[in-house]
Structures are given as structure tokens and as C-alpha cells.
Length: 486
Image (cartoon, rainbow, N blue to C red; front, side, top):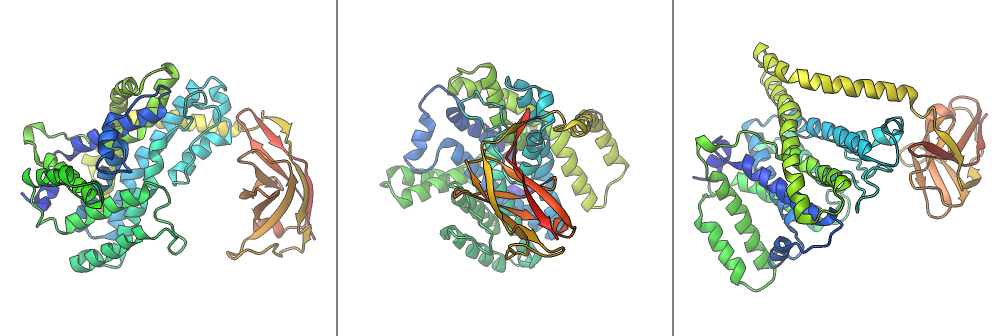
């Protein structure tokens, strides 16, 4: 059997392999989250072959390798860029949205510092969900898991921006039509692989912006190239064992690491081929298990704060599998199936019968959150206590502008206001200008800058502004200054 036959056949066991990889990530995170110090013996063994990789990091790299193979295979089956884009969106975002919403809600209920009402009546609740949904990552919400060793609500989502970038790269390649020509496709992928050697931004777009990114990106490109040559790659047990033998006996260095990765990738492909129709794992909860693993571990530590890493893994894993399975059945699979049928123009009564089975549960959940959101937004911030910020605004510039004019014009055409201050404002503070929250950068040199919308400069009048920081049950404000539009 070659790789092409394995990947294009439904008779494989990669769903189970991906589930196992998600559990390895949970295992790796246990040592980071638990307050009890312990030795990660599996990671120590891996470090003999790949000096910068832990067990969780290796699992993520294998995820990217398999993603490169299967996403490329999907593109070859249907080289329509728009179809590709819709399918990738359906795969990533529905499960992510519900995971962010559900786990933050559970985290708020588990918090001992504030009531759930105080959380949902605060901007931070919504900012966490929707900022992370478009990969402007926010790790914490004040008071949630604050008594744990690490307060991050979901550290697993840090890999999603890179995954999305890899999808975007393939999408752009498809828009230029290179997918249809394997030679051009391979050439483009090889050229893009050279970006692994570049640290700077490319066209103001930084592909590898985190320490793990280059290794995971390399694994994705290896997966893409593997599928391009999939008809020539034979799946057997001998080849990975040969590379493992070389990795064991060769001295430490680059080739030892390369042979180790060759063994890992080929062995994973071999394991994927060992199956029978009787034992195929048809569910694919791995994405959900990966997403829910970290927050489930955090919730477990709220109840059992002194769990060792090993016991944390064994307690959190079955709960994560349960949540991941629910996510697949009720959120991910219905969206994926709808998109596939919609693109194939087969959205008929049979699909809606399928959707109706899930819609009862999903509908109830959506209705609950809709009521909560509507209620909280109607009351949001109305009862917050306003306190004085230990920061004083001393000067700003310019002090005025003619109606319809611009101030401190930026390269992108935005108007900006600079403000001098004394006393460091709290992290996350922003300027409120004429009642509107502005995009603000707080500098370390006593200067804050904020983008002022043109709509605010097009109407005459005195515009009051100040620094503000929103907390869960209160908000802190600085002294107020006046900007004038003549």
C-alpha cells in the first residue's frame, strides 16, 4: 500500500491516532499546570533525539504533519479554492466558538472571586470569546483560575493561528492555480519552506511568531510534500524501524534528529494503516479533546488543587474525551456536513432530518446563551463602581482641530492623539474619547497614543477623554481632559 491509497481510503485509523496525539498534549500540559513538581520521563527520552521537543510539542508537530497530508489531499480531490476555504472554516471555528464559550462559562462559575453575573456583565467575558475566535489571543480573564498555578484559561489555542496561516498559504496557492500542476505546487512549497530560515515579517505578515512555529510549520510542509509524492511512498514496518535504528546508533546532531523524525512520521503512517473495517474508529473527537483538555485540567485543579501531573492527566483525560465527543457530534460534524452538502448542492430533506436530531440539544444551548448575552448586554456596566485611577493625564496633542481635519496623520491614514501621563496605568487601560473606547497603546515612556475615528473629528464640539480600565465589578478612570473640534 502506498500513502495515496491509505489517505484516500476510509479504511484507516487516523481518527484514533489523532485522539491519542490529543491525549499526549494533555499529558504534556499536566506537568506545566500541576503545582506538584515531577519528572516527565517521556519528554526526557525524546530530548535524546530532538533537543528542543517535549512529548506535547512532538504530538503537535505530528498533528501538523498529518494536517499537511490530509488538507492537501482534500485540495487535490476538489481544487476549488472557495470550497477549500469554506471547509477549513467549518472545521476550525464552530468547535472553537463553543469551546471558548462553554469553558469560560464553567471557569466563571468555578471562580471564588466574583459572581457569574459580574462576569457576564463585563466586557472581558465577550472580549475573551470573540478576540480568540479571530486569533487575537487573550489568555486570561481576571479572577478565573487565579488561584491555580497558571491562570491561562486555554493554552491549547496557541497553535490555531499557525494552523490557519498554513491553510491560508494553501488557499493562496490554489487561487493561482498551482494545485493542479504538481511540479509548480512542489516548487512553491519548497520556496515557502525557505521562509523557515527567515525571522522577519513578509509583507507585514509574520508566519512564525512563536517559538514552536517553525518546527510545526516545517512538519506541515513535510506533510504537503509527502502527499505530492504519495504514490511513491510505500507504507510498511521495515522503513520506520530502519530510521529508528539509525537514530539510535548515530551520534547526537542534525542527522540523528532527522532520522528520528523520519521514524516518527513513517511509523505514524504505518499505524494508520493497521486496521480493519470492523474496528475503524468513525468518530473524530481529537480536535475537541485538544481544545477542551487544558481548561478541563484547570477546572480539575480548582476542585483538586494538589493533584500530581500523572493523576491530573488520568482525571482530566476521560472528561476531555467526553467533551470532545460531544463537540464532534453536536457542533463540529453538523457544520462540516452542512458545508460539504451545500458545496455539493445536495442540501435536501435528508440533511435537515439529520440536523433536526442535533438541533434540539444545540437549540436549547443556543437559546440559553442568547438569553444570557441579551440580558447581560442590557445591564452591562450599569452597576459598576467607578474608582479613581492612580494615573494623571498631564498634556496631549494637538489640543484642537478644524472640523473634518486630521490629527497626527499616520501612514495608514488614521488620525492619532498622543497623551502624556504620570503614574503607570493598569495593564489593559484604554482611552475613552467622547464616550467611545479607542484603540490605545500605552507606552513605557509616559506617553499613550490612540486612534481617533474620523467621525469624531467631523462634528464640532468639546470632546471629553480619559484613561479607563475595566475590572470585573468596577472600573478605574483617570482625570478628564478636553479636546476641541472647531
